[in-house]
Length: 346
Image (cartoon, rainbow, N blue to C red; front, side, top):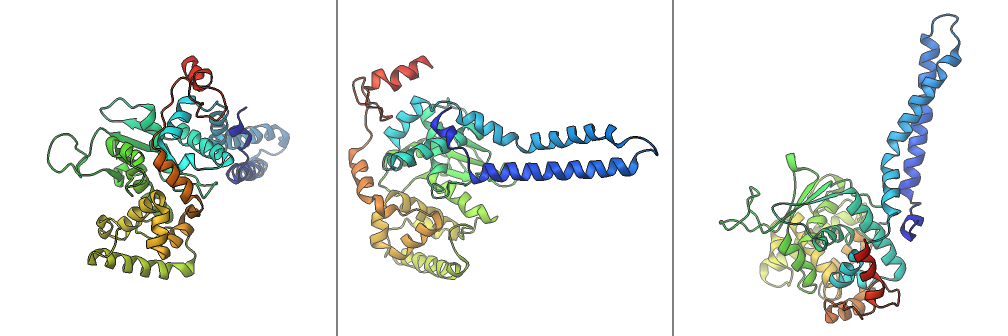
């Protein structure tokens, strides 16, 4: 069993087991009562008990199916290729402590194991798959028990697209990403070039993956309205609304470095501010201290404690791994004798 699998015992797992047990016991009691009430006079009750037990166990099996699937996912070794991608492309990951990196890998395995990531008219590569999943993990990393029930599939388009989902060389193809509604509920579309550039330019305050998953964090209370359902206490809602109003007015006056796409509406303001928060937390804290503190509460992450590490990793750029480089997994071995060898043997 992997280290990730050993850390499986979570509040979600315990709650799932307790709920399944409770419903199974209740089902057994109800079925037994109904069997007793409906049985022909003189027929022994014990003949109906095995049927009630089998049906109750079937209910327990159904309610714990997702849990067993997740255990199987986490029992798999973490792919060396994914580790290389994280170390090369994801500045956020490289600044985490070892224990946090272990949890990040676990979250990545779960997301990629449970959600579909589908390429549309393109050959989907591992880097794109991993970065799509990373986009989901970063915003909710402050919530170890988070479950991404709001999404089931991410569609990767080869380019930007129009409002009617068309892509290619035509006019009106300006959309970088979109959270689906209606028939496309629980789906997301990301343009591959913009997804990749969001991680390869970690200082420009633009990351379409983080932007779109910020909309889903916003939607955690049922509506994408710029008022996230997590991280804000009831007494903070009024101050948040007023802060957003003031910040949008600063943008209108030209007195802000926040991208003016944030003026579209309050929901887009939240998503744009999220990009800024995760890519340049030190700058946001200096220029927009109230906004930084509010977003720190929303995402339950104090990024200012890692500002120096983030700056160092941004300056370092995208590390390249030659055969004789130290292995990115941190084993202390050379890349060719560790993850490279394992990736070729898979």
